[in-house]
Amino acid sequence: MRGAVIHAPGDVRVETLDDPKILQPTDAIIRTAVTCVCGSDLWPYRGLEPIGDPHPMGHEYVGVVEEVGSEVTSVKPGQFVVGSFATSDNTCANCRNGFQANCLHREFMSTCQAEYVRIPNAQGTLVATEQTPAEVFWPGLLAVSDVMGTGWWAADAAEVRPGSTAVVVGDGAVGLCGVIAAKERGAERIIAMSRHASRQALAREFGATDIVTERGEEGVTRIKDLTGGIGADSVLECVGTAEAMRQGLRSARPGGSVGFVGVPHDVAIEGQELFYSHVGLRGGPAPVRRYLPDLIDLVLSGRINPGKVFDLTLPLDQVAEGYRAMDERSAIKALLTP
Image (cartoon, rainbow, N blue to C red):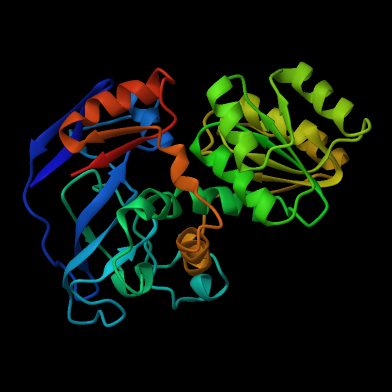
């Protein structure tokens, strides 16, 4: 089969790889319908995370089941399925508590930019749709496997409630999906921090009521100006940089909450500042599996369309162009068709 392999910063290639096989009785093999490049894939692409030996890439997927292991009964060959970037048995104590991304048997997906993918813990990870959805829904369902699920987790962790004010730090795919989540959870005012006209337009389409272009202390001041000098009830930090975390913590009101879902890079939190702020802080890898059934229904009913974050569609053979476009910020998110 064909699959994407990263060799070095800026060097992603499509190569012929071995077809995946059932290795454990809890595995499934899917034929990829669509996959994509994620913003977190850019960390190694930019040389900000070690790469080591060349290895496959990708952790977002939807597809059709080809084969299942002997212990998999929840899905069967021929079904269209959506999964999560973090696999889970959905039965351990952490899963039962709603934190499937910390399943005791978790494996992070890392080979999904390919024609076929092995899914560990398939019994608890994969959710089948009633029938194969029309292709128009595939991008939205693909978003659910990571960025929409992560945006929802950001809003959940930030305790977005009906009538509240939410700030979204970051205008990438996760941040834009966070706007959708904040609206669906009933936020009355949603302030999106963005400096890019096309992303601002999409944020407004998704439900943002205000746009803030300032950053750093100027950004914090602007948020305070928009919130009566107090700050927001909820802040969704969807980037992962030290600046974004500072922006998030200082934009929240006393008693407010920050949900941080951007993978932290060089982030350090000053204990005294957090202590006296009375701001709550929660985040981590999104428990996407917790939200999958509801989010799939929201997409298939047409209530939400997170697939709009895919503003570039390429064949898998052109995956390198997808990485380049996202690195240069000329694309929000690249959809790949095998």
